[in-house]
Image 1 (cartoon, rainbow, N blue to C red):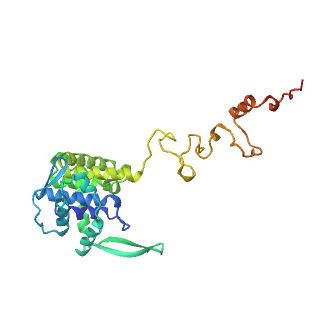
Image 2 (image 1 turned 180 degrees about the horizontal axis):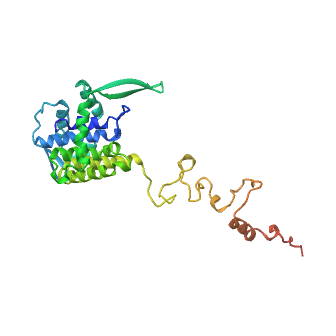
Image 3 (image 1 turned 90 degrees about the horizontal axis):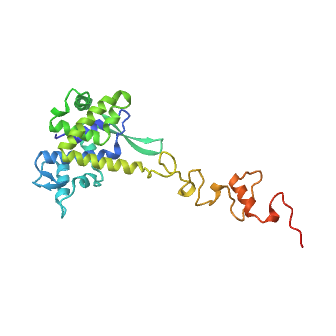
Amino acid sequence: METLAEDLLLLAVRPNGKLGAAPKLRFGLSGSELVRLAAARRVDIVRGRIVVLDAAPTGDDLLDAALQTMAGGRRQPAAKAWVARSRPGLVDRYLDRLAAAGVIRAERRQVMGLFPGTRWVVVDTARQAQVRARLDAIASGSVVPGRLDSEQAAFAGLAGAIGLAALIYPGFAGAAARKNLKKAATRARSESPEVSAVADAAAATDAAARGRPRPGRGDAGGHERLGPGGHRRGGGGVDRRRHPGRHLGFRRRGRPPRRGGRRSPLARGFTQFAAPAACRPGLDPPRPE
């Protein structure tokens, strides 16, 4: 339980040196702090809100900083809101802790020869393999979800909540492993309000990051098609705000007709019956009496 945040980071380090599930890592780290503080009986969650039971220092500077943010407000913070709260530099501080312990190493480099970047190399591969083995034991089904202890349930729940399961067990081959982790995460959410808060915050962030439009407009899949300037397009692919009437085949007033262009039958019929008799094709102009 003491290394829950560091274990999530070790799982997130990919073979290419990048961090997987980077946009949601901060939720997993905040959730791990909440789980650890609840396990140590420093805080409790009552009706979705964090109640600080003991604000004394824990001996862990990062955990103490988290505890101070819970106790510093005038009102008890909601667990979901606290997990989703922006805490700049949280991931970097835990990465620096792992680097100081000699578990990982940062390699500075330039991407495309222009932009600075960081590649994380795991030095203590034995520890990373041990963390992976713990998750594999749950994903393989060798540990029944009903027999998971609180630490295993929190570990599986946090890994699933921030999307690490799909990275570690991808594709059709990892479907069974993801299913077992989902069962364990479901149990963790039902028994642990801390894990539930992490999952809710991660799901809300995932929906916001995808930016899905409202269904029922545009294409059959519910996605809107936007024209130049961000204007909505109609079902036929014509921007009705910029070109009114174009989806019916009409021309804008004052614009010369296009040579060789075709108008729809509806537009031709409109011209046939709405134009004056002298202009109708096939009719002679009226004779003066």
